[in-house]
Length: 338
Image (cartoon, rainbow, N blue to C red):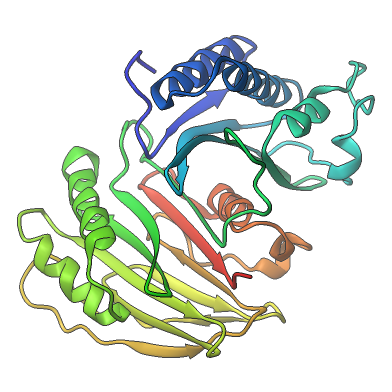
């Protein structure tokens, strides 16, 4: 990574040797400076970054760490997501306590992460690896994790991803977007950036109207496959409108998946047919959306307890196991909010 500012989409680090700890820590400190965080908050962030990378080096196979800025109500914070395919842990809560160790060390790594973090969540299974998600915010602690979480990862060899996601709440509507800019690299990323900007600025309206707005706003780009969903658990319905090869499913409380319909088309090109479909969506349901850089063969039933974790941890776990390296990849998970 260069000394440039960390982009909003974040930076993935491959963590294989102990030297990665200092690389990630310096990048985290630069991001803290970019966001105007205090010296005390920056010091806490440095500890978390160092401990996460140290744990990946000691315990993980194929360890990767995402560092990115996050924002809420005018505040800026930092999020780190550590993902590995290592031996995993039978009891993550036990391993997070100070003094518990599996390598003969003092066993304070995960305990230090939990103490310094504003928000922490994770998932681990023996033989399946571990996902740890951490947020650090200035000011008051976060009462609970967000109702939606997502990650993107660029094609191997690329520095930017043509896949993207976003969420917004406007006039009581909770809406999410997943888009896949055509191709790869900067031009695909520019198409997705245009979709994100248009989505955030779109007038309030149902998903089909938002998709039409995005289509009109993207004519200067190479175009994208995209989908907009609006979960409404109070009404027991999810409204959905998609163009192109964005995959989406509603997962019920019993773990069963129901695929959602996206129509052929490219946002920003020609004049696609845009339709909206309604699907049952109750308080126990989950929405999972992803680009074609993620295979569609996943099943939440293969991950006992994962549906109880945060949307971000669910998304990271699916990206790790179902994402492909020969394409940009994006996963978004949303659940009912309180």
